[in-house]
Image (cartoon, rainbow, N blue to C red):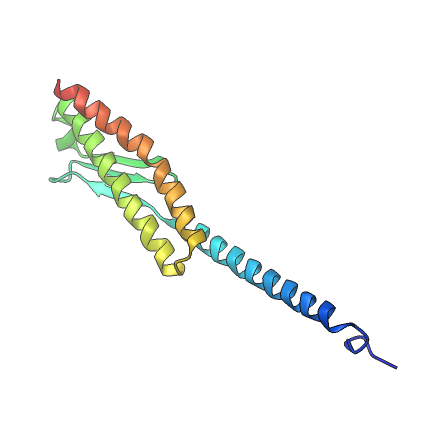
Length: 142
């Protein structure tokens, strides 16, 4: 009589197919875990920048949203046009910092095609806000 773990009655080709499927399933689970680890690391990433003299400091979330903006009294005294330019430039630098931090966060979790694709997707999403800030700066200079 054979027990529950006994596969002596199962034909060899069936056992081989089963072993192949189990290996594929284990590999898929490992890729999924790697992507989840990369996603968690990316979700924790932030980007921060300060203007040269520290009048403006900006922080952006992992999704590129402005989460903190600090303006010193000296920054407020610069006037609206200069301050606006300084705020835009500082936010742009925070987004660039975020981009680097996202790449570093995923590199720390282990680099794979799936995590690289995830980084490419998220950093690609930062192109819109960066381009808008560049357009705003270009319009101010005209």
